[in-house]
Length: 455
Ligand SMILES: *Cc1c(COP(=O)(O)O)cnc(C)c1O
Image (cartoon, rainbow, N blue to C red):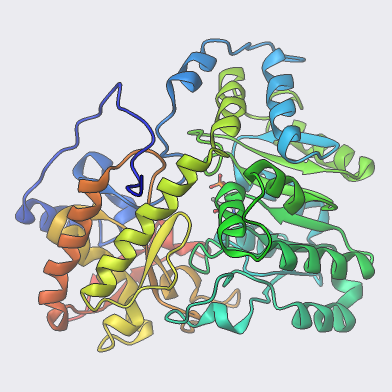
């Protein structure tokens, strides 16, 4: 059979609430045009993020009831640890309440003023934690990754020549080399197995630990299987293990490729580093066998990790995004090609070329989409990345709007509705105006900034 179907049937449903265009206009004004400020029951289809929004399986809900809430030594921790190590055999697995807590702990140890941390592209919380500790976050993506319309199978790859040159030049200042799979901030684009191993080997030749931000490890493995020469015959688990082979550590958000609503971990091989991390964990998260999570959360993650590597799920997951991406392309809307693993990214800068980057074309698209159809998307562009640590403003590399697909939540007809909404927006695109920022906090402004429409 060629039709790719949702590889599940629905046992429990959650109604979604319809609103009128007039209601949405008022709600946007009240939210100061920041979609993070909306109440989610005013949103019909929520594509703000794929983080923590997955539908858990019946097996996961069953596992929740087996959660053991002992403070120390809970069997739920050991099931969680075994499930992680079945895929990524790190010596130390340290649970955290989400991915950024793992980053905060890691960078409280590794990031200091004067230090520089290279990656293919740091995600916003990663960058925030590095810069918050006074260090610099450097993105060394291949040039193809910065051209939204260019088709390349692994647009998340690290520029290995640039990494080599970076380490030659700044070696002393570099505490670790990172790579993000898939590259969320760069369009959900995958990193090839060859590139992961190449970055690892360069890091090791310079004596640096190699840390993987593995939030979407399963989606990345699917792309390796379907796009990288010689990988088609391998199982997903086998590829995942190979991705992490020889890595010195990982940070993880279980809200992504673990089908959990909360959770994360920091994994390390180095005993001394792990001791420092656990000390910090106890100060900020909790005892090392629960780390800011309930036993039931650890159970949900452990079960989720066995489900995420299912090939039928991954085929449906990736195909959903390809489908939306193809249909938007057919409407003449520029999208990042190929579609990302967890999201479709619309190139707002190219589409609304009458709005300059510093008037936030991505924000304009996201606001327009909510107004037209009640769909919530997320700007990933100059609002998110346009502010330097010194407070000056510059256009981000790209102005994208991310349509992040929650895992196992929406169906084919939801995808068709999303496409129709873009058709409506396309019909009046030249009348869409930009925004200015009326108020912003000192860091990570996209979550709380207030906007005002221009003219
Ligand atoms: C979500 C995410 C994080 C942070 O994880 P949280 O669980 O949201 O704190 C870090 N890196 C990447 C690539 C992510 O997508």
